[in-house]
Length: 281
Ligand SMILES: C[S@@+](CC[C@H](N)C(=O)[O-])C[C@H]1O[C@@H](n2cnc3c(N)ncnc32)[C@H](O)[C@@H]1O
Image (cartoon, rainbow, N blue to C red; front, side, top):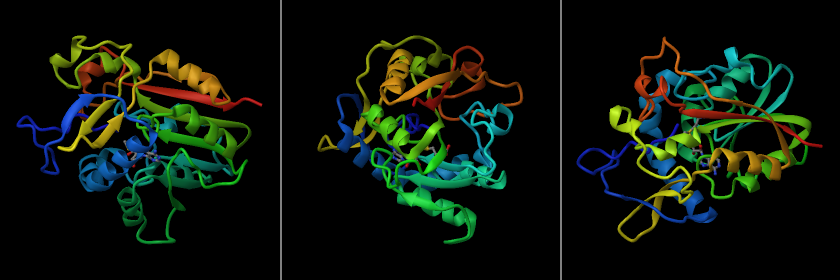
């Protein structure tokens, strides 16, 4: 999930340098480069901090803990070819494989995929892994029945319609594409788990990307905001029909904070949006 919370109170980061957080434009290439570097540098920290919540072979859609086993948003997965985009350490793909699917786990970050290998016990022992950018999927047309992404590439790409068109291309007719992102509503609030994260501090309508940059002004981390309406239009422009939009509620059993996602905020405002789409035509 997203890590906008990782700047410590003294301004340093887990990696020791001091990026400057700002809102400014960041095109596709710059976003992709920045995020590949960020995930490579921070994959170890991410997996050690969140690995136990994610589980080695669990499919959770977001910090609320909504499980695909419970939600069934992908429909029947047994016997299906499934592409997981922004798979990280491929936890969701492992869950899919255990249910009889044939998953392929794709990620931009080499280090994240090394964690997938670690969990699998080495090359060739687990789900197939592919290192690639979601904007240029290295597969033939019509290779998959389903595609999914739990907070994978979509929060990070400047041109979501380009990704949707790629996903549509590699899906077979009628194929389902389900992805989760930070709920757009959250962009109006400070990225804080406590009460300070409950007061509107910015315009929901401001689509300017969140960027962290180094001393030379080079982006080292980028997140892109789309409003709810933007996402619906993007899905349609990308060649899909939107069949459901799920806003998981914070369950009573989950007392765990994940960055700015907390029981306090989760009980009051939505934290995750899951878009369930089907290939149109
Ligand atoms: C928040 S993690 C989610 C991973 C996994 N689904 C989970 O819940 O832990 C986001 C992942 O998306 C990947 N990612 C970011 N931009 C991407 C892109 N353009 N193409 C493919 N993967 C990307 C990152 O490398 C990272 O592993």
